[in-house]
Figure 1 (cartoon, rainbow, N blue to C red):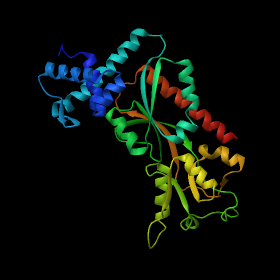
Figure 2 (cartoon, one colour):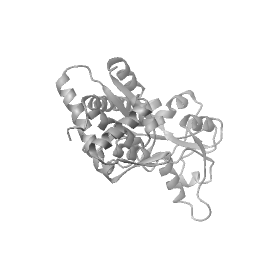
Figure 3 (cartoon, one colour):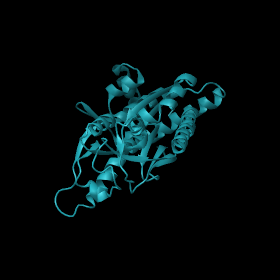
Figure 4 (cartoon, rainbow, N blue to C red):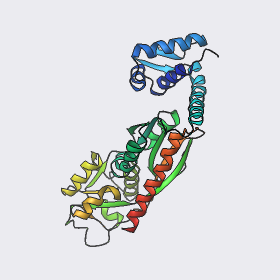
Length: 306
């Protein structure tokens, strides 16, 4: 085992995570030939193949599957040892964060600004995914931490900290016929509904709630716009009704370009930060978790007071 150099394990872990020599080389800033050579050197030292080459695709062999958790543990221990020796030095290290449009654009900018100016040694990489994709990437080690906006707060294989309750707003263009009285969920089944792509917890829960009221016929249909920005513009243009996180429509509601309908969602979503259960968090990752918790909770507190 003396031949198991840490740099080879780092390369192996990256290739095993993304299942691509090309992508691993790009993320590690190596030439692809260097990544291929390092994997071959590791396989030679272990006298076994770690990947099956299937044309343009690769997958882990059984030996590779067995090595992967040990490689991750050794990498994490190395980072922890480095942090312990460096001590009071500035936090530094790569940090891959799974996030979503609503949080990146409307909640995380102060956090990103803080790390950009105060902790330049922390190299942040943001990946936009939602729900199951984020959880899977965290379990596989593709992401170091990930933001979730979910009803549930416990997720198999993950450790989670709840940052804030995330209020939702049902919005449409001013002058909509439902604006003058309390809106019942049954009223919405017959309306033109706008939504982001499936996979967003608020979209999926809203759709499920409406479909539970459909006795006969086809389930409710959403006109999908993919992004929050496109969905907001469609709602403001009078194309229908959309359920979105309140933080994403606060400016439009204040400006009067969107109208909030008097309807309360029968479910509660919580913004959360998660990471793989049992993972030793290096100092710069712990710092990110602490600052995210502080800033998001401050934002939520300010919103509830305004």
